[in-house]
Image (cartoon, rainbow, N blue to C red; front, side, top):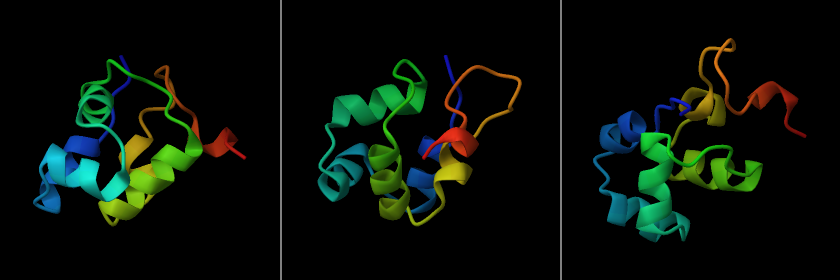
Length: 77
């Protein structure tokens, strides 16, 4: 499972999963899976939509230790 900081930044903005779902158009279930790492490698468009909703950068939310498996932000188009 890939770690990310989505839950941290969502809570910093005082958003529930429902609030974030309403802002992004993504399902609560999908967002929950992203937060827990049971769903990995969201599209760049999805990451951008989420980052705008929580007012932070894609890298801050989805980057993890480069030695770990997961989405390497630097290699996205």
